[in-house]
Length: 49
Image 1: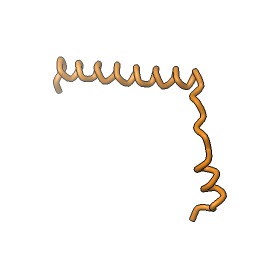
Image 2: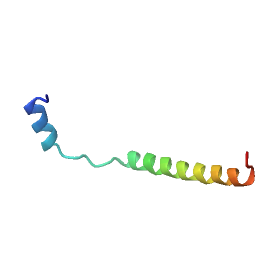
Image 3: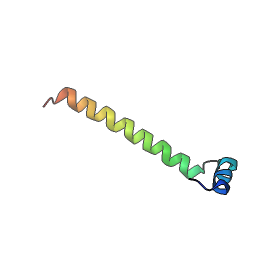
């Protein structure tokens, strides 16, 4: 069972805002993922295995 003090601290904790570098990393990750998805989809259409 969770210690009541720890449970209370986690419930009262405030979310920290994202740092600019974290926002940049999230954006780059999403862009790379979407780009790879498109590339693999096109590759699958033009080079069926």
